[in-house]
Amino acid sequence: MVARDATAVAGMGERTDAAIREVLAGRRRGIGSTLVMVGPAVVASIAYMDPGNFATNIQAGARFGYALLWVVVAANLVAMLFQALSAKLGIVTGSNLAELCRRHLPPWAVVPMWLASEVAAMATDLAEFLGGAIGLSLLAGIPLLAGMVVTGLATYALLMLERRGYRSLEIGIAVLVGVIGLSYLAEVLIAPVDWAAAGLGVVVPRIPSPEALTVAVGIIGATVMPHALYLHSGLTQNRAPARNDDERAALVRYSNGEVLVALSVAGLINMAMVVMAAAAFHLGHDDVAEIGTAYHTLTPLLGPAAAGLFLVSLLASGLSSSAVGTMAGQMIMQGFVGFAIPLWARRLVTMVPAFVVVWLGIDSTKALVLSQVVLSFVLPLPMIALVSFTRRRDIMGRFATPPLVHAAAVLGTAVIVALNVVLVMQVLGVPIPFLPDAG
Image 1 (cartoon, helix red, strand yellow):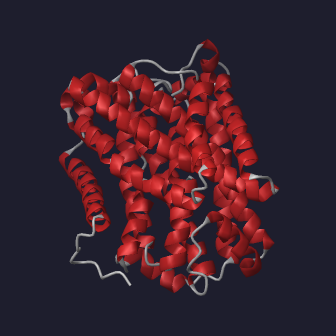
Image 2 (tube, rainbow, N blue to C red; image 1 turned 135 degrees about the vertical axis):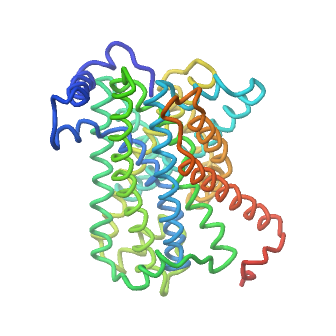
Protein backbone atom coordinates (compact mmCIF):
# COMPACT_ATOMS: atom_id res chain seq x y z
CA MET A 1 0.00 0.00 0.00
CA VAL A 2 1.01 3.63 -0.13
CA ALA A 3 3.77 4.17 2.41
CA ARG A 4 2.24 4.43 5.88
CA ASP A 5 3.62 6.51 8.71
CA ALA A 6 2.39 6.88 12.27
CA THR A 7 -0.61 8.96 11.16
CA ALA A 8 -1.60 6.42 8.52
CA VAL A 9 -2.20 3.63 10.99
CA ALA A 10 -4.31 5.66 13.39
CA GLY A 11 -8.04 6.18 13.47
CA MET A 12 -10.39 3.78 11.74
CA GLY A 13 -7.59 1.48 10.57
CA GLU A 14 -6.37 1.01 14.12
CA ARG A 15 -9.89 0.21 15.35
CA THR A 16 -10.38 -2.23 12.48
CA ASP A 17 -7.15 -4.04 13.37
CA ALA A 18 -8.41 -4.43 16.95
CA ALA A 19 -11.75 -5.75 15.71
CA ILE A 20 -10.01 -8.26 13.43
CA ARG A 21 -8.02 -9.51 16.43
CA GLU A 22 -11.32 -10.02 18.27
CA VAL A 23 -12.65 -12.08 15.37
CA LEU A 24 -9.52 -14.19 15.15
CA ALA A 25 -9.66 -14.83 18.90
CA GLY A 26 -13.28 -16.00 18.58
CA ARG A 27 -14.66 -13.19 20.72
CA ARG A 28 -16.61 -11.58 17.90
CA ARG A 29 -19.09 -13.45 15.71
CA GLY A 30 -22.00 -12.93 13.38
CA ILE A 31 -22.38 -10.52 10.48
CA GLY A 32 -20.18 -7.98 12.22
CA SER A 33 -17.24 -10.36 12.18
CA THR A 34 -17.64 -10.79 8.43
CA LEU A 35 -18.00 -7.10 7.67
CA VAL A 36 -14.87 -6.14 9.59
CA MET A 37 -12.88 -8.47 7.34
CA VAL A 38 -14.21 -6.86 4.17
CA GLY A 39 -11.93 -4.37 2.44
CA PRO A 40 -8.97 -5.61 0.38
CA ALA A 41 -10.99 -7.48 -2.26
CA VAL A 42 -13.44 -4.59 -2.56
CA VAL A 43 -10.55 -2.20 -3.22
CA ALA A 44 -8.94 -4.61 -5.70
CA SER A 45 -12.29 -5.22 -7.42
CA ILE A 46 -12.44 -1.64 -8.67
CA ALA A 47 -9.70 -2.62 -11.13
CA TYR A 48 -12.31 -4.87 -12.75
CA MET A 49 -14.82 -2.12 -13.44
CA ASP A 50 -12.59 0.77 -14.49
CA PRO A 51 -13.15 2.99 -17.57
CA GLY A 52 -11.18 0.52 -19.68
CA ASN A 53 -14.01 -1.93 -19.02
CA PHE A 54 -16.51 0.70 -20.15
CA ALA A 55 -14.67 1.14 -23.44
CA THR A 56 -14.24 -2.56 -24.24
CA ASN A 57 -17.71 -3.52 -23.02
CA ILE A 58 -19.39 -0.80 -25.08
CA GLN A 59 -17.59 -2.06 -28.18
CA ALA A 60 -18.40 -5.67 -27.34
CA GLY A 61 -22.11 -5.02 -26.86
CA ALA A 62 -22.58 -2.54 -29.69
CA ARG A 63 -20.68 -4.50 -32.36
CA PHE A 64 -21.35 -8.10 -31.35
CA GLY A 65 -24.50 -7.97 -29.24
CA TYR A 66 -24.53 -10.54 -26.47
CA ALA A 67 -22.01 -12.86 -28.19
CA LEU A 68 -19.02 -11.98 -25.99
CA LEU A 69 -20.72 -12.23 -22.60
CA TRP A 70 -19.06 -15.61 -22.09
CA VAL A 71 -15.65 -13.88 -22.35
CA VAL A 72 -16.63 -11.60 -19.45
CA VAL A 73 -17.68 -14.62 -17.38
CA ALA A 74 -14.53 -16.61 -18.20
CA ALA A 75 -12.24 -13.65 -17.50
CA ASN A 76 -13.97 -13.02 -14.19
CA LEU A 77 -13.53 -16.64 -13.08
CA VAL A 78 -9.81 -16.42 -13.86
CA ALA A 79 -9.69 -13.11 -11.97
CA MET A 80 -11.26 -14.70 -8.88
CA LEU A 81 -8.64 -17.43 -8.80
CA PHE A 82 -5.69 -15.09 -9.20
CA GLN A 83 -6.95 -12.44 -6.77
CA ALA A 84 -7.48 -15.17 -4.18
CA LEU A 85 -3.91 -16.37 -4.74
CA SER A 86 -2.58 -12.82 -4.49
CA ALA A 87 -4.40 -12.18 -1.22
CA LYS A 88 -3.20 -15.51 0.22
CA LEU A 89 0.39 -14.66 -0.76
CA GLY A 90 0.27 -11.43 1.24
CA ILE A 91 -1.49 -12.99 4.23
CA VAL A 92 0.86 -15.97 4.51
CA THR A 93 4.21 -14.32 3.73
CA GLY A 94 3.66 -10.80 5.04
CA SER A 95 5.16 -9.54 1.77
CA ASN A 96 3.59 -8.34 -1.46
CA LEU A 97 4.16 -9.83 -4.90
CA ALA A 98 6.64 -7.16 -6.03
CA GLU A 99 8.78 -7.64 -2.90
CA LEU A 100 8.83 -11.40 -3.43
CA CYS A 101 9.83 -10.92 -7.08
CA ARG A 102 12.84 -8.86 -5.98
CA ARG A 103 13.69 -11.43 -3.32
CA HIS A 104 13.33 -14.65 -5.31
CA LEU A 105 13.84 -13.84 -9.00
CA PRO A 106 17.34 -13.67 -10.56
CA PRO A 107 18.73 -10.11 -10.65
CA TRP A 108 18.69 -9.98 -14.47
CA ALA A 109 14.91 -10.52 -14.42
CA VAL A 110 13.95 -8.03 -11.72
CA VAL A 111 14.57 -4.75 -13.57
CA PRO A 112 12.85 -5.80 -16.84
CA MET A 113 9.87 -7.07 -14.87
CA TRP A 114 9.72 -3.85 -12.88
CA LEU A 115 9.84 -1.75 -16.07
CA ALA A 116 7.13 -3.87 -17.71
CA SER A 117 5.00 -3.52 -14.58
CA GLU A 118 5.49 0.25 -14.58
CA VAL A 119 4.37 0.34 -18.24
CA ALA A 120 1.30 -1.65 -17.24
CA ALA A 121 0.62 0.75 -14.36
CA MET A 122 0.83 3.74 -16.71
CA ALA A 123 -1.42 2.04 -19.28
CA THR A 124 -3.85 1.34 -16.47
CA ASP A 125 -3.87 4.92 -15.27
CA LEU A 126 -4.32 6.19 -18.83
CA ALA A 127 -7.60 4.31 -19.03
CA GLU A 128 -8.74 5.14 -15.52
CA PHE A 129 -7.81 8.81 -15.43
CA LEU A 130 -8.93 9.60 -18.96
CA GLY A 131 -12.22 7.76 -18.48
CA GLY A 132 -13.03 9.69 -15.33
CA ALA A 133 -12.18 12.97 -17.03
CA ILE A 134 -14.41 12.13 -19.99
CA GLY A 135 -17.28 11.37 -17.63
CA LEU A 136 -16.84 14.62 -15.71
CA SER A 137 -16.44 16.63 -18.92
CA LEU A 138 -19.68 15.31 -20.38
CA LEU A 139 -21.61 15.42 -17.11
CA ALA A 140 -20.60 18.98 -16.19
CA GLY A 141 -20.35 20.32 -19.75
CA ILE A 142 -16.75 21.48 -19.32
CA PRO A 143 -13.75 21.09 -21.65
CA LEU A 144 -11.95 17.74 -21.44
CA LEU A 145 -8.68 19.34 -20.27
CA ALA A 146 -10.50 21.06 -17.41
CA GLY A 147 -12.15 17.74 -16.56
CA MET A 148 -8.73 16.11 -16.44
CA VAL A 149 -7.39 18.69 -13.99
CA VAL A 150 -10.44 18.37 -11.70
CA THR A 151 -10.30 14.57 -11.89
CA GLY A 152 -6.61 14.60 -10.93
CA LEU A 153 -7.31 16.78 -7.90
CA ALA A 154 -10.33 14.69 -6.86
CA THR A 155 -8.31 11.47 -7.14
CA TYR A 156 -5.56 12.90 -4.96
CA ALA A 157 -8.17 13.96 -2.38
CA LEU A 158 -9.54 10.41 -2.36
CA LEU A 159 -6.05 9.03 -1.77
CA MET A 160 -5.63 11.38 1.17
CA LEU A 161 -8.36 9.46 3.01
CA GLU A 162 -5.67 6.94 3.90
CA ARG A 163 -4.10 9.49 6.21
CA ARG A 164 -7.01 8.65 8.52
CA GLY A 165 -6.20 4.94 8.27
CA TYR A 166 -6.67 2.32 5.58
CA ARG A 167 -10.30 1.72 6.63
CA SER A 168 -11.33 5.22 5.55
CA LEU A 169 -10.01 4.61 2.04
CA GLU A 170 -11.63 1.17 1.89
CA ILE A 171 -15.00 2.69 2.78
CA GLY A 172 -14.56 5.50 0.24
CA ILE A 173 -13.81 3.00 -2.52
CA ALA A 174 -16.73 0.79 -1.44
CA VAL A 175 -19.14 3.73 -1.71
CA LEU A 176 -17.99 4.43 -5.27
CA VAL A 177 -18.33 0.72 -6.14
CA GLY A 178 -21.90 0.94 -4.85
CA VAL A 179 -22.57 3.95 -7.08
CA ILE A 180 -21.34 2.03 -10.13
CA GLY A 181 -23.38 -1.06 -9.25
CA LEU A 182 -26.63 0.79 -8.59
CA SER A 183 -26.21 2.84 -11.76
CA TYR A 184 -25.92 -0.27 -13.91
CA LEU A 185 -28.74 -2.04 -12.12
CA ALA A 186 -30.91 0.90 -13.14
CA GLU A 187 -29.49 0.84 -16.69
CA VAL A 188 -30.46 -2.79 -17.34
CA LEU A 189 -33.93 -2.12 -15.95
CA ILE A 190 -34.35 0.79 -18.38
CA ALA A 191 -32.84 -0.90 -21.47
CA PRO A 192 -34.95 -3.32 -23.60
CA VAL A 193 -32.77 -6.37 -22.90
CA ASP A 194 -33.27 -9.64 -24.79
CA TRP A 195 -32.66 -11.85 -21.78
CA ALA A 196 -32.85 -15.10 -23.76
CA ALA A 197 -30.09 -13.93 -26.12
CA ALA A 198 -28.08 -12.66 -23.15
CA GLY A 199 -28.34 -16.05 -21.44
CA LEU A 200 -27.18 -17.75 -24.64
CA GLY A 201 -24.22 -15.37 -24.86
CA VAL A 202 -23.18 -16.30 -21.32
CA VAL A 203 -23.10 -20.09 -21.86
CA VAL A 204 -22.19 -20.52 -25.56
CA PRO A 205 -18.53 -19.62 -26.34
CA ARG A 206 -17.99 -18.15 -29.80
CA ILE A 207 -15.85 -15.56 -31.57
CA PRO A 208 -17.99 -14.21 -34.42
CA SER A 209 -15.18 -12.45 -36.32
CA PRO A 210 -11.45 -11.62 -36.21
CA GLU A 211 -12.35 -8.15 -34.95
CA ALA A 212 -14.22 -9.78 -32.08
CA LEU A 213 -10.97 -11.46 -31.02
CA THR A 214 -9.30 -8.06 -30.53
CA VAL A 215 -12.23 -6.90 -28.40
CA ALA A 216 -12.22 -10.22 -26.48
CA VAL A 217 -8.54 -9.84 -25.62
CA GLY A 218 -9.28 -6.25 -24.62
CA ILE A 219 -12.00 -7.53 -22.27
CA ILE A 220 -9.48 -9.89 -20.69
CA GLY A 221 -6.93 -7.09 -20.41
CA ALA A 222 -9.57 -4.90 -18.77
CA THR A 223 -10.71 -7.66 -16.41
CA VAL A 224 -7.61 -9.48 -15.17
CA MET A 225 -5.34 -6.57 -14.30
CA PRO A 226 -1.56 -6.78 -13.64
CA HIS A 227 -1.58 -4.01 -11.05
CA ALA A 228 -4.46 -5.68 -9.17
CA LEU A 229 -2.36 -8.83 -8.71
CA TYR A 230 0.41 -6.76 -7.11
CA LEU A 231 -2.00 -4.61 -5.14
CA HIS A 232 -4.11 -7.27 -3.45
CA SER A 233 -1.08 -8.98 -1.91
CA GLY A 234 -0.04 -5.65 -0.40
CA LEU A 235 -3.50 -4.69 0.84
CA THR A 236 -3.56 -7.78 3.07
CA GLN A 237 0.02 -7.82 4.33
CA ASN A 238 -0.24 -5.02 6.90
CA ARG A 239 -3.91 -5.38 7.79
CA ALA A 240 -3.78 -7.01 11.23
CA PRO A 241 -0.97 -9.39 10.19
CA ALA A 242 -1.39 -13.04 11.19
CA ARG A 243 0.72 -14.17 14.15
CA ASN A 244 0.46 -17.93 13.63
CA ASP A 245 -0.78 -20.51 11.14
CA ASP A 246 -4.23 -20.73 12.71
CA GLU A 247 -4.74 -17.01 12.19
CA ARG A 248 -3.35 -17.28 8.66
CA ALA A 249 -5.83 -20.04 7.86
CA ALA A 250 -8.72 -17.97 9.23
CA LEU A 251 -7.67 -14.86 7.31
CA VAL A 252 -7.33 -16.87 4.08
CA ARG A 253 -10.87 -18.29 4.54
CA TYR A 254 -12.34 -14.83 5.07
CA SER A 255 -10.32 -13.50 2.15
CA ASN A 256 -11.54 -16.22 -0.23
CA GLY A 257 -15.14 -15.45 0.70
CA GLU A 258 -14.62 -11.73 0.14
CA VAL A 259 -12.96 -12.34 -3.24
CA LEU A 260 -15.89 -14.52 -4.32
CA VAL A 261 -18.48 -11.89 -3.41
CA ALA A 262 -16.58 -8.76 -4.49
CA LEU A 263 -15.53 -10.13 -7.87
CA SER A 264 -18.97 -11.65 -8.48
CA VAL A 265 -20.36 -8.13 -8.10
CA ALA A 266 -17.66 -6.79 -10.43
CA GLY A 267 -18.47 -9.52 -12.97
CA LEU A 268 -22.18 -8.74 -12.87
CA ILE A 269 -21.42 -5.05 -13.43
CA ASN A 270 -19.25 -5.91 -16.43
CA MET A 271 -21.98 -8.13 -17.83
CA ALA A 272 -24.49 -5.33 -17.28
CA MET A 273 -22.27 -2.98 -19.31
CA VAL A 274 -22.25 -5.39 -22.27
CA VAL A 275 -25.98 -6.11 -21.92
CA MET A 276 -26.85 -2.41 -21.85
CA ALA A 277 -24.68 -1.67 -24.90
CA ALA A 278 -26.14 -4.65 -26.78
CA ALA A 279 -29.72 -3.67 -25.95
CA ALA A 280 -29.26 0.01 -26.77
CA PHE A 281 -26.84 0.00 -29.72
CA HIS A 282 -26.46 -3.37 -31.46
CA LEU A 283 -29.57 -3.10 -33.62
CA GLY A 284 -29.24 0.13 -35.57
CA HIS A 285 -26.27 1.71 -33.81
CA ASP A 286 -23.60 -1.00 -33.89
CA ASP A 287 -21.01 1.58 -34.95
CA VAL A 288 -21.06 3.15 -31.47
CA ALA A 289 -17.53 2.69 -30.15
CA GLU A 290 -16.75 5.89 -28.24
CA ILE A 291 -17.83 6.77 -24.73
CA GLY A 292 -18.95 10.23 -25.83
CA THR A 293 -20.97 8.82 -28.72
CA ALA A 294 -22.53 6.26 -26.40
CA TYR A 295 -23.66 9.03 -24.04
CA HIS A 296 -25.14 11.19 -26.79
CA THR A 297 -26.83 8.17 -28.40
CA LEU A 298 -28.30 6.95 -25.13
CA THR A 299 -30.23 10.19 -24.58
CA PRO A 300 -32.66 9.78 -27.52
CA LEU A 301 -32.73 5.97 -27.25
CA LEU A 302 -33.29 5.41 -23.53
CA GLY A 303 -33.78 8.91 -22.17
CA PRO A 304 -31.69 11.42 -20.21
CA ALA A 305 -31.85 9.36 -16.99
CA ALA A 306 -30.04 6.42 -18.62
CA ALA A 307 -27.45 8.75 -20.16
CA GLY A 308 -26.92 10.55 -16.85
CA LEU A 309 -26.51 7.28 -14.93
CA PHE A 310 -23.96 6.17 -17.50
CA LEU A 311 -21.84 9.26 -16.84
CA VAL A 312 -22.22 9.09 -13.05
CA SER A 313 -21.00 5.48 -13.06
CA LEU A 314 -18.13 6.36 -15.41
CA LEU A 315 -17.02 9.23 -13.15
CA ALA A 316 -17.21 7.05 -10.02
CA SER A 317 -15.24 4.38 -11.85
CA GLY A 318 -12.56 6.81 -13.01
CA LEU A 319 -12.02 8.41 -9.61
CA SER A 320 -11.87 5.18 -7.62
CA SER A 321 -9.83 3.14 -10.10
CA SER A 322 -7.34 5.94 -10.68
CA ALA A 323 -6.75 6.23 -6.93
CA VAL A 324 -6.30 2.47 -6.66
CA GLY A 325 -3.97 2.47 -9.69
CA THR A 326 -1.77 5.10 -8.04
CA MET A 327 -1.58 2.99 -4.88
CA ALA A 328 -0.58 -0.03 -6.96
CA GLY A 329 2.09 1.96 -8.80
CA GLN A 330 3.65 3.02 -5.49
CA MET A 331 3.62 -0.59 -4.30
CA ILE A 332 5.21 -1.86 -7.52
CA MET A 333 8.06 0.66 -7.36
CA GLN A 334 8.69 0.22 -3.66
CA GLY A 335 8.58 -3.58 -3.93
CA PHE A 336 10.88 -3.93 -6.93
CA VAL A 337 13.47 -1.23 -6.30
CA GLY A 338 13.05 -0.41 -2.63
CA PHE A 339 11.98 3.21 -2.84
CA ALA A 340 8.90 5.26 -3.69
CA ILE A 341 8.42 8.78 -4.96
CA PRO A 342 6.01 11.14 -3.17
CA LEU A 343 2.37 10.34 -3.84
CA TRP A 344 1.67 13.70 -5.46
CA ALA A 345 4.62 13.20 -7.83
CA ARG A 346 3.41 9.75 -8.92
CA ARG A 347 -0.10 11.14 -9.40
CA LEU A 348 1.35 13.90 -11.58
CA VAL A 349 3.61 11.61 -13.63
CA THR A 350 0.89 9.07 -14.37
CA MET A 351 -1.40 11.85 -15.60
CA VAL A 352 1.07 12.81 -18.34
CA PRO A 353 0.14 10.07 -20.89
CA ALA A 354 -3.52 11.08 -20.72
CA PHE A 355 -2.67 14.74 -21.39
CA VAL A 356 -0.45 13.64 -24.31
CA VAL A 357 -3.31 11.60 -25.80
CA VAL A 358 -5.64 14.60 -25.66
CA TRP A 359 -2.99 17.05 -26.90
CA LEU A 360 -2.21 14.87 -29.93
CA GLY A 361 -5.89 14.56 -30.77
CA ILE A 362 -5.91 10.76 -30.42
CA ASP A 363 -9.38 9.21 -30.14
CA SER A 364 -9.89 8.79 -26.39
CA THR A 365 -11.93 5.59 -26.50
CA LYS A 366 -9.51 3.97 -28.94
CA ALA A 367 -6.69 4.83 -26.54
CA LEU A 368 -8.67 3.21 -23.72
CA VAL A 369 -9.19 -0.03 -25.67
CA LEU A 370 -5.55 -0.21 -26.83
CA SER A 371 -4.38 0.34 -23.25
CA GLN A 372 -6.32 -2.76 -22.25
CA VAL A 373 -4.61 -4.80 -24.99
CA VAL A 374 -1.23 -3.58 -23.65
CA LEU A 375 -2.24 -4.78 -20.20
CA SER A 376 -3.12 -8.19 -21.58
CA PHE A 377 0.42 -8.57 -22.95
CA VAL A 378 2.07 -7.59 -19.66
CA LEU A 379 -0.32 -9.71 -17.59
CA PRO A 380 1.45 -13.10 -17.96
CA LEU A 381 4.52 -11.80 -16.06
CA PRO A 382 2.87 -11.29 -12.64
CA MET A 383 0.57 -14.26 -13.28
CA ILE A 384 3.52 -16.61 -13.80
CA ALA A 385 5.34 -15.20 -10.75
CA LEU A 386 2.21 -15.53 -8.61
CA VAL A 387 1.56 -19.12 -9.70
CA SER A 388 5.18 -20.02 -9.04
CA PHE A 389 5.46 -18.41 -5.61
CA THR A 390 2.16 -19.74 -4.25
CA ARG A 391 3.17 -23.27 -5.23
CA ARG A 392 6.53 -23.16 -3.41
CA ARG A 393 6.57 -24.65 0.09
CA ASP A 394 9.72 -22.71 0.99
CA ILE A 395 7.65 -19.55 0.57
CA MET A 396 4.12 -20.63 1.55
CA GLY A 397 4.76 -23.51 3.96
CA ARG A 398 1.64 -25.61 4.45
CA PHE A 399 -0.37 -23.00 2.57
CA ALA A 400 1.29 -23.88 -0.75
CA THR A 401 -1.29 -24.19 -3.54
CA PRO A 402 -2.66 -27.75 -3.84
CA PRO A 403 -2.10 -29.55 -7.17
CA LEU A 404 -5.63 -29.10 -8.56
CA VAL A 405 -5.74 -25.36 -7.87
CA HIS A 406 -2.20 -24.99 -9.20
CA ALA A 407 -3.22 -26.79 -12.40
CA ALA A 408 -6.19 -24.42 -12.82
CA ALA A 409 -3.88 -21.41 -12.35
CA VAL A 410 -1.40 -22.78 -14.89
CA LEU A 411 -4.26 -23.36 -17.34
CA GLY A 412 -5.58 -19.82 -16.85
CA THR A 413 -2.14 -18.38 -17.49
CA ALA A 414 -1.66 -20.56 -20.58
CA VAL A 415 -5.00 -19.52 -22.07
CA ILE A 416 -4.21 -15.82 -21.69
CA VAL A 417 -0.73 -16.28 -23.19
CA ALA A 418 -2.27 -18.24 -26.08
CA LEU A 419 -4.82 -15.48 -26.73
CA ASN A 420 -1.99 -12.97 -26.89
CA VAL A 421 -0.13 -15.12 -29.44
CA VAL A 422 -3.26 -15.36 -31.58
CA LEU A 423 -3.69 -11.59 -31.42
CA VAL A 424 -0.08 -11.05 -32.57
CA MET A 425 -0.74 -13.43 -35.48
CA GLN A 426 -3.82 -11.42 -36.37
CA VAL A 427 -1.98 -8.09 -36.21
CA LEU A 428 0.81 -9.49 -38.43
CA GLY A 429 -1.71 -10.79 -40.95
CA VAL A 430 -1.01 -14.48 -40.32
CA PRO A 431 -4.12 -16.57 -41.19
CA ILE A 432 -5.88 -18.06 -38.15
CA PRO A 433 -7.64 -21.25 -39.27
CA PHE A 434 -10.38 -21.40 -36.65
CA LEU A 435 -11.52 -17.80 -37.17
CA PRO A 436 -13.76 -16.62 -40.00
CA ASP A 437 -12.29 -14.17 -42.48
CA ALA A 438 -12.86 -10.50 -41.86
CA GLY A 439 -15.87 -9.07 -43.61
